[in-house]
Image (cartoon, rainbow, N blue to C red; front, side, top):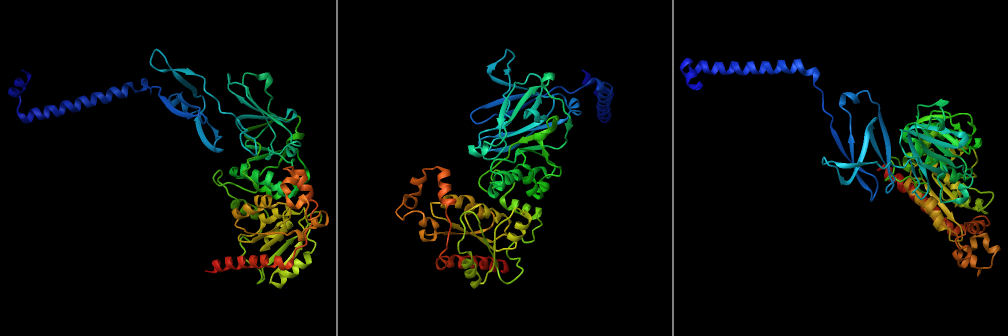
Length: 505
């Protein structure tokens, strides 16, 4: 009926204009309505579903109910590190503060949602590694030296947890760990005001707490158990990290001052002597990560041994990065002398043979002056030495230099290769091994040739390190057969020439 009336009253052209006008009028009314009532409208809460993996074999779904966006704008974001124990990797998880976290089981509620239960909290400390225990503590962290404890203050209702950690990276060695102080790491509820120590010193930088005891003083263990792990643990902070040392030995800090200062811009704190203080940090790592013997595993770290050697060159202002950078036509060979055990009884003859082949030869024993030793080693192309802590200084060699490790009698090959042979490959250092014969060892002056010491070393010491060390490492000196050793020196010279030829091309 209405269509008929419109058709009689208006032409087709007028009907079309009337329709356009009606559409514009409706649009104007809708915009006016939204403008007037906008202040009374607000966003609805949303449910953010997140899959949370709590560990191998313990998967669990999580529902996190977040506040509206306008309420989150003034909320400070916090981050936590979740450690995957299976791979020892770190996963950075960022979440807003004041987020209520709940989990569900398979039961369902009457409104169709799963029944909510308490969430499993990830442990602060990882004690599953074969070489080291360490803790990553983030939040309100309080260090109380008087009780040798680290406390994380958490929100009300959190369960108490605690760990006892000795912060030295050789957990498998009872003798080394016996001298390392034990620290208690625990959580505490913010409602326990009387049980929470008040901060006397507040720090804005994260902290790393480690021990300077164990086998410190042995050059190999200084780097292997403390310095490389300290680099591995703290390098990511780009010097914005506060070091706390327990079991401090001032001479040790002085000896490696340049490395420590290149890792942290702050003066190191002898935490054991801060008895009246409570130091508070935004985060703290207790203990050091360690991957192996003079090793950084690139699969588990953003850094490599090449990076560490570059860091050392920077710390000690070493000039040579590669053996191609030579000051003279003659390659330089260093014979590492030893005065106590595993001495070269004919070092002069070894030096004479090397000079005849065209080497410039230096015979020296490493000293406590790390700067001087680093500069000397960095100036050399080849290092010759008996297996021992002095060979740790190959860390300062230029790339493509050569290590000649002399291996004593007594099935010492395994430890020689593990400590220096394999690591040298990751350092871009050529490796040659010279295994001495019985007649080159001083042990033939102490035992008959048919003695079990020679015939079956494993049966002799039966896995007892003390017995192995006392005979094969402490009582053995070497007099090399120059004619037999000469081809090894020739091969070292060939390796240097091969590298230089490749560099020229």
